[in-house]
Length: 372
Ligand code: NDP
Image (cartoon, rainbow, N blue to C red; front, side, top):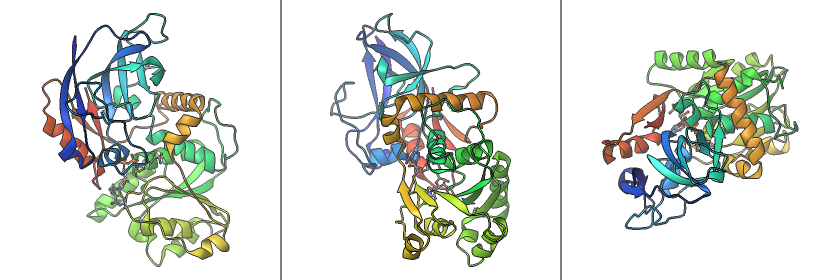
């Protein structure tokens, strides 16, 4: 028998209140369609916390499959596992392979698991680290999809292996939450694909810190980085005109991670017929849309949800993941800053729960990643 530990919750609430560390054993005789895996790394994303809180767009089923006293669920949507053993030697997976989830909400915050082989996607681990693979499938894929599906490339057939192909010739997009995982990915794909970006970050405690973050994003490939106070100021219109040569270069796309006033201001920055894609609501504030933008400028307001896209195009997803991993291997795409949380057999419940609870806080140094 293999001993395994998992974070579980049996009712919705704040992670620090409802998460428990559960120990159980896994029988070595696994079903023939399944594989036994050990987790190498698993990330903590805002959506995981919202799922535990019960405020996310989908809920996890609660079961007693891993022997918890009450029906429960294992959180975690993203991670990388190593195959330890297979239920049947004719499966396409072999011992030592690296896999990521192919099914939604399979629960990555655990040391070991038994999964259906077809709920996993094998990846080529060559020259990659566990944290690089563990963080590839949500943030970078969201940025990739939004830029491809709503940027100047919109209409390009999806599902094709994408190379670092030039799809724009300097078209602008604007985004808030630019230092988020998704935002940093959008900056980098934008640079690789010939788009130019205007990036909004929240003001830090001091000018120096704000400036340091601006420089960090510029080194990733951002063309323009402004603080939220600039975006919301009266001068923004003039500043934007300077950037876009008096409005001769129109902004065709906005990526909204934040909501509230910041989103309204992104919408006001857009050109005729442009699209604002909302994918996150970090400020928890609703978006107010001036009617003039709808009527006179015909701005499109749409939402994007990766989970739904993944279900529609599994092959396209595989190509996208492979493409991004390849960009990482070639040194064209950098990881987000990470806050590594060691999880070994002796790790207690409290530091794990605290790491999760901290994952929605603002002004963080990096994305939380459990490292096993
Ligand atoms: P990260 O944890 O990497 O970054 C969080 C971002 O949110 C930072 O830019 C942070 O800025 C900002 N932020 C935090 N608190 C606030 C606040 N109160 N007001 C304004 N901004 C704030 O996040 P991810 O990139 O993983 O996710 C970002 C958003 O995108 C989340 O809402 C997430 O759920 C969503 N998302 C949606 C997907 C979809 O399919 N629709 C897929 C992936 C993510 P600062 O440093 O200034 O605090």
